[in-house]
Image (cartoon, rainbow, N blue to C red; front, top):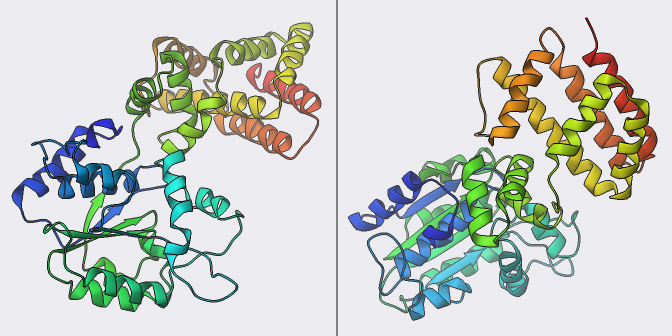
Length: 369
């Protein structure tokens, strides 16, 4: 439902106004980057349209139609998505419907990679085939079960191959009371003839505060951890959900303390810090360094009289002080040092040696005249 999503009220109000007008465009393109939640928004809008007792601001969430839509089981909601060939022969997306429903149950902001892994391999080739387009044409030609609209939701239309022309014909001459919702992460890869026949609705990635509030409300985690996850994910809700179990303690104190040790070049303290980091494993260290990179990014933008996110007070205080320390120094160099460290650790390099070398490089940079 709209009320549960982390997106701005202006976006939700726009869709509600479209619904209330009774003039819903027959083809809408919900465009947003990975983790933007464009699929969740499209499903919420479908739920509102199919709801039996919709309120002025949202679906009711309790009627039979809402319950069916929630599990993608409403007979007037048709969902299609890219899928692999079965035994090298074209088949239909419905073969993988249970896996798709499980995908959304685990994370309502899925990525293409998540879907490929759910299918068995992150490298599996997926597409939307001509047989699927023909089947969709048959399904939407049927009379509406509820007497309301029929909704054809197509996730990732950029994976349309030769089937694109068949879909185009459906959109050009839609059956009565049929709506097409296209949910895309890269509209540049969608056929221009299809794009020209849709009304585009841009779905922005949630802001830092929207992500933080969503995680606190929907997952019950504390404010500090929610803010850390929000900074790590940078509006990518898919990453935010995946980081829920990876952020068990804040990174702010250990990261800023480590930088101070590097600047003072306290070898004993640096070695102690590296030992503590190493005990937590590679994933923790990667998140630790990634968090630091985001703080440094914010400091760079602050030094250029720009802000990206609304940071908590302690992070903001650090950003200001660090900007003063970095005056006249290269942010790109520091950013590259941390980025190289992450790649080395992710590539199974010796984390102690990498962090030690990184500490020395940071010391040399920060102490430059």
